[in-house]
Image (cartoon, rainbow, N blue to C red; front, side, top):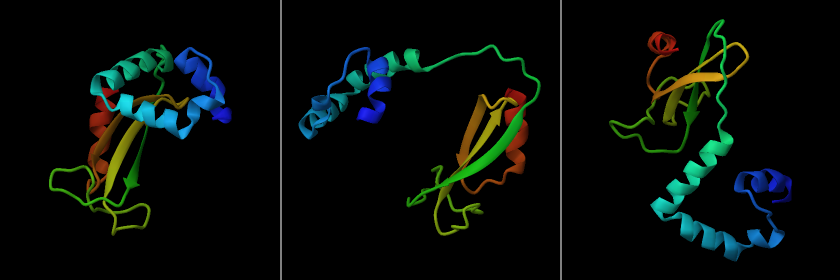
Length: 130
């Protein structure tokens, strides 16, 4: 908690004490945040304090894909599918994320797709959106 105390205090807008992170307090927090309305209100409040929008002159776009593997059971319509594994784990289902960024590295757009897709057809739709 001490490593992240300053950022947590800024995000929450109030001081945090070490006693705020006991197992009992965290259990109470999880119980309160299990209510959808409370969780949505927290996310909405944090969104405005953690999001920054920049006016960026677009001089180019860089595209890259990556795969995220996991110990999941693939379903017919799910994102996690068996496919060519860049991680050399063809036994694990994966999803693929195609990302577009401007040259300084600011994310412009991304497309999560099922893991069995090849990279080639994913470039053009993302470029057109950017």
